[in-house]
Amino acid sequence: MVYVYAVLGLLILLLAGDALVKGAVNLSLRVGIPALVVSLTIVAFGTSAPELLISIKAALENAPGIALGNVVGSNTANVLLVLGVPGLITVMHTSQCDTRTSYLQMMGGTLVFIALGFRGVFDMTAGLILLALLLVILGSQLRTALRHRAEGQADEELEEPEGADPDMPWWRIGLYLALGLIGLPLGADLLVDSAEEIARMFGVPDAVIGLTLVALGTSLPELATTVMAAIRRQADVAIGNVIGSNLFNLLAIIGVASLIAPIQVGPGFLQFDFWVMLGASLLLLPFVYFGRDLGRIWGFVLSALYLGYVTVVLL
Image 1 (cartoon, helix red, strand yellow):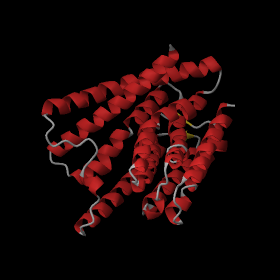
Image 2: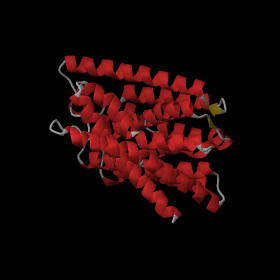
Image 3: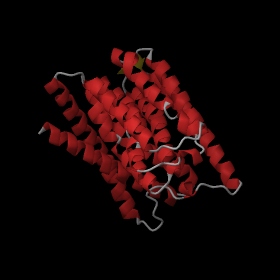
């Protein structure tokens, strides 16, 4: 039954996160918050809500391996698996995308995150630093987007936030918000408790379950989004989705969670997992800077590297 509860918790998390995004987006638009701001903030935070609730729940229950493994494992999976699998399906013309600024921001956030990790704990000080960096990056993205819009180069995706429905009635907005706010903690409870039980059953550290089962599960929405973007020949959406998700995982999720409860950093993260995450991020360099397209060979390489990483972690 523990596996059933884990799958049920993950399913509730994903559905509740989607409901929260829809409710929050339409509430924000109804009260007059610009669509541009909604896209850069509310949608981004909302889609990271499942990971956030998992990390907070795990930190409060003294399961730092799950709290940290959820984020580190998700970031590794986002590059190797979420980009690798679509690459096996079709060629993504990433050479036509300009994601250099976002990529540099992600790499900067990754280096700051690792440096703070070597303090041995993500505490309130680390959380405030991560959130301050997130605010600086969001401010920079907002200024850039406003400048592009003023120049008539507005990104259509920013003008139509995910889940936006101008005709959505107030009662449905309230229902979506209620489902999201109730479902997220419920799903987090089920998934974290089940993950801890599975770790005890197999006699492995909770970090192993966080880096594999939990991280892979919470990366499924990004995988689905990226596969669809690749099929539709929207390489900018695919790679932008991965970069944005990784940035929010590091700065927002651990930033907020560490303000609520300190997250201890196990030696395995310092010796291995942080560096795998950094190495995976560096693998994006050919696509971001050197005009490489992500085709089947690269898709195979990235996917194989992820399978190899998971095998090493489980062994």
